[in-house]
Amino acid sequence: MSETTATGRDRHAAAVAHTSTTGATIELEHLTKRYPGSRDPAVDSVNMEIKAGELVVFVGPSGCGKSTTLKMINRLIEPTGGRIRIGGEDVTDMDPVKLRRRIGYAIQSSGLFPHMTVAQNIALVPKMVGWPKSRIRARVEEMLDLVGLDPGEFQGRYPRQLSGGQQQRVGVARALAADPPVLLMDEPFGAVDPITRDHLQDELIRLQRELHKTIVFVTHDFDEAIKLGDRIAVLRERSHIAQFDTPEAILTNPADDFVSGFVGAGAALKRLNLTRVGDVEITDYPTVTVNDRLQEIFNKLRGSGTNEILMLDKRRRPYKWLRRGDLMRAKGSLARAGTLVHDTVTRDATLRDALEAVLTDNTGRVAVTGRRGEYIGVVDMETLMNSVHELLEEDRLEAMEHQHELEDARAQQTHFEQEGPGGEAKA
Image 1: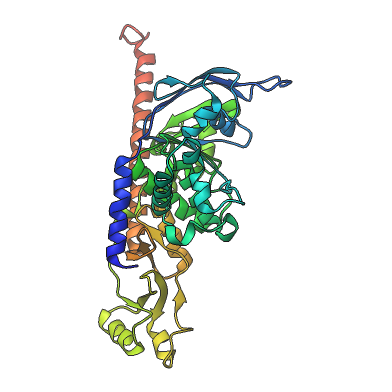
Image 2: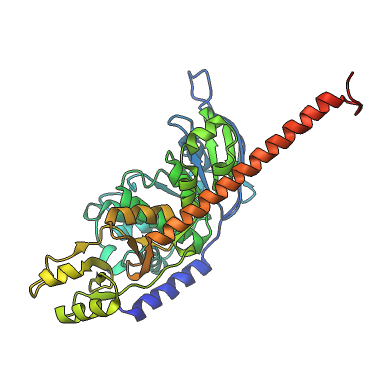
């Protein structure tokens, strides 16, 4: 893809984001679901306020009611008590079909209709609400471009012709097609492989930065919650809220033992999920392309002062790591030489993603790519380890401060016990 085309599409995506509907507040008041024949409610009097443009993650053990709570927001499951307000409007008694057309919904395994093309799937809700055909065609192209799929290549395909990750992207495009202020996502990335899941998470972070929707996201994976959420609601049984706070606050100050169980060991490493690759130094690295001649590649490697070089494919995506020994053994062809790039990260990936990718590729660095997989630079192990050490030092200082506070409190208590309430020493 030419740089001109990519730049034009970026401007187009920015224009789409600028004109789209932004998020709306969601208020849940004593929201309850009780199933006939059950002694206890499945969801018991949930009170929560979600800010406009906020991404809130529900996380909790299986069966705690998080998906039920989510589905009551768009009334796929009808509440038996309480109120739901979206943008200040009480939607509890609204026609549920009309309500769902105003709320995007993305689920695990995408939920695409197999007999419809990608374009027809995305166009479904805009068609239902009466958009004109020309506007629908333009919107399908906008949405595919927004989720990183070439409209010319993908809109005529059927779901069976897509990979799992591509299906999920189309599912998100369909959920956003009618420009809803609210997007509900029920474990949408749970059925794809870990690498694809990381990239889909990065894509959601990028989309949210552009669109500012209100997103409620359900997951059982606490690391995913930390990576994605502006705030996380840790839910107990019957959707009782154990803690509703920012990821950093939950990691550093869990409310109780139940929440601590979700945080688990290695809180400092989990905090790597709070820092993005774009927040640290991305450095350039010597590159060649598959079209370069062997002698040109050898000369560039020799002049680079490094022991390896990154080969890019015809679309300037990371392809292979080539070392000096690979070139010496190439004998005129690089077809079997070098090590394939197994993983890359985007600017929106977390430092934990980057660390895992470095360890997977075993090269001491990971390539950073743009929206369409094009090479941007690299992040190396030294940068990542410096970040880990900084987090560990922060944790050490916080632990020392907490210990000093406990000692001061004990000293004050001892003084009070010795002096008595009147300030005089006890006899």
